[in-house]
Image (tube, rainbow, N blue to C red; front, side, top):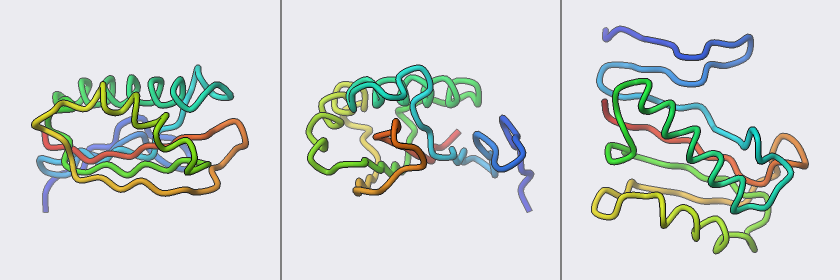
Amino acid sequence: MAKLTRIGVGPRLCEAVIHGDIIYLSGQVAGKAAGQSVAAQTADILEQIDGILAGAGTDKTKIIEATIWIADIATFAEMNSVWDKWVPQGNTPARACVEAKLARPDLTVEIRVHAAI
């Protein structure tokens, strides 16, 4: 079995797990932009994802799959306006986006990705 490396281990979850040549990120939510607009939260989350991926020796061009949860599907276009500027054209991942009630009322976006290393 391939070695597991856990990144950012906490009492309930870890920030990411590396298994073989894949990094699996936990769902990322806004840190500094919590309570702000969907666009601001999306940008904050994508910045966090960039940092986690870089720390593992990879980047957004190697994202395999993304799942995005938004609290209100009416904000889909607003979230996509930020996503579309960030995601590398020609290296877009498989993706799903759904409306969901998130963990706290000040959170409007959550994003999880899996990427090759």
